[in-house]
Each structure stands twice: as C-alpha cells, then as structure tokens.
Image (spheres, rainbow, N blue to C red):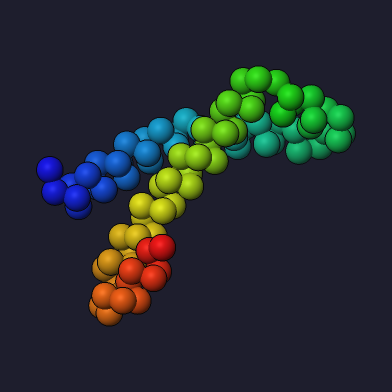
Length: 87
C-alpha cells in the first residue's frame, strides 16, 4: 500500500473516532463549565473521564500531525523546508 493511501485511511479513521469523543467532550465541558474547582477535579478523577480525555488528546494530536503534514506536502515545494516542517 502506498504511504499516501495509508495516511488518507488513517486520517479518515481518526476523524471518525474523534467525532464521538468531541461530542462527549463538548457535553462534559458544558456540564462542568459552572462547577466549582472540587467538582471539576472530581469529574477528572473519574476513571472513565480520564480514559476518554486521554483518548481525545492522543487521537486529536495524531490527527493534527497527519493533516498538518499533508498541508506541508501540498503547499511547501522546497524539499528541505518540507522535511524540517514535518519534524
């Protein structure tokens, strides 16, 4: 399989995984927005919240890296600059 195809598939899969995680995060954020510090700490002390938030951050970072590297490859034409930007 060509590397571009792998990147495309990984981008699509990670974006599909991000949709329910972002919905969960937005609903959770709205629910804890006006809460006190202790209630927010209690929310993030919950094991399920920790796992879901960690998944959100890791997958969002992975998605970001994939998409920004595609932008660099499409719009930067100097190979050296492209390699530095992707690092």
